[in-house]
Image 1 (cartoon, rainbow, N blue to C red):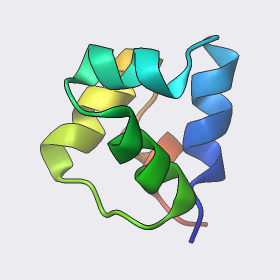
Image 2: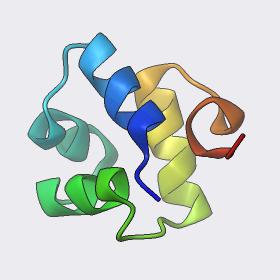
Image 3: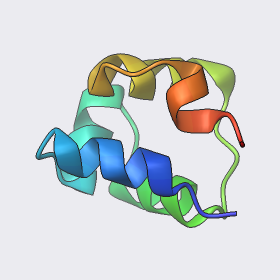
Length: 64
């Protein structure tokens, strides 16, 4: 399932996939795969992404 919430939060912060990847210490491809739903990130990566985007785990990774 695509992670639209992650992409929307990233765009709202005016960050490219490359910029977010650099902030959290992964490749741009990893961010792309997470957004497309093809990669299940570790909890520590989820937390790092949430911190970078000023969001909670529920905001970005909890399915409604």
